[in-house]
Amino acid sequence: MNRSTTLVLALLLLASSTSPALVQEEQAGFEPVPAGNLVAGTLTIPAENFSIKAPGRQWEWLRGAVGGIGKNYLCRNRETGERFLLTVLGPFPWHPETAGEEMLKGMRKSQEAQGRRFEDARHEPAVIPAPGSLRLSAKIVTPETTIHFTGYVLAAHRIYSIQLFSETPKEPESFVAFVKSFKLTAPVATPATAATPSASGVGFVLIMFIYVAILVVCLGGGVLVNAIAGRPVVSGGLLALLLILAVAALLVSRDPGEQPLAEKFGYHLVQALLPALIALWAHAHHLKKKAQASRLGA
Image (cartoon, rainbow, N blue to C red):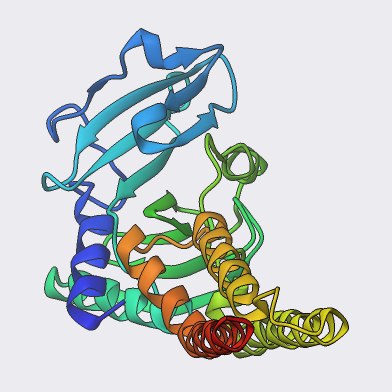
């Protein structure tokens, strides 16, 4: 995630409310969530690939837009006024090694521009709502009050941020349960699951080893069969080429990364290129020997 994108995200996360306590949701453009998206308090938005459950029957769901690039979903307790916020943005690029620090920097800039102090900012890995998430926390201090901010951020094609603004530092059990209830309705790679064989050095070596093994077995098997037959009857190179292309196609189809299909295909093609060229050369050599044998037989 580059700095400009992170700053935009951070500003939107906090600008999604008219104040840290989210006290003016009606005036901020919130409206009731359509009944078709609710079942027994569980909000499901198939177009944004998530579901999340309200803490109880006394909670209601509202929604609002975020700058034309996302949505806010506000879960509000009608009896106590307690509020939890889910912001859905993106898709955005995501680099987990720098995202936490960059988001907190953007939040600090946003709050300080409004005359507030942004203190005790922390980020750490989290396993909720899913492995690979980040937990952010900070204090937003004004002359009148101190607001404790807690946010859980999950990157899974889109960016999902579940936020709490509270006057007390401890996360209520209802908020923790709310975060845990968040589910992706369809599998998507997250920072914890996106490391695939094609995305790591070890995986790259493993795939190359597979290609080399295919070459050795096919070419060696072809030489053995042809030696027994006394003539070039089997093209080990052709067999190796077909198997290498099949493996590359399988890797493309099974790659859970979020890159466009053309980009995935290009990556796996580069991996397979050298082994495929060797197999092609071996096949050409086989055809040459086969032609020579045919001329001698004639």
